[in-house]
Length: 217
Image 1 (cartoon, rainbow, N blue to C red):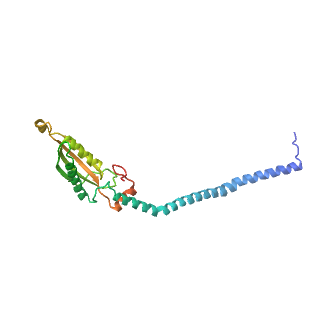
Image 2: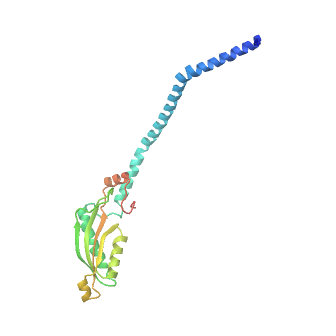
């Protein structure tokens, strides 16, 4: 069977189609993958770099304002009533012992309460990651039940923020046999955070760590 010969017009159209197909294949094989695709990738990477540069430039522009804000927050923390009045741990420990004496002296309703022993703790234990220094004292009391409740409440609920740990309450069995109303013997550790300097407060704020009670006002 012989194939029909194409008319001259159809031959020209077929030749044009084959030429276009060859050009398309040549573009895809030779030009697109070797030149166009790499240029498109470079263009995309340059756009990403410009975006990254813009973000860094914006962050650098905000740096003075952020530093000013951190310094202001640090100064506010240094002036906060949440901290002990002194920035020296030894003096702050002495203030803690005096506060216990004052609170016990004012808690006389419903019985008696006396301070039998008070000692500073030179190196109070600290939780990992705490940004502030602590001052701590060891306290021993002889108290009736109602004054003891008043003392503990006044210490933990007032300002500066104080923390009672290692609380031990018991009644001497010998004294209890002789007197049913014998006072309770109480021992605990009382601690608070030393007032930071402005620089230390700013560093603590920038570190993002918080104390046991969370962010202090």
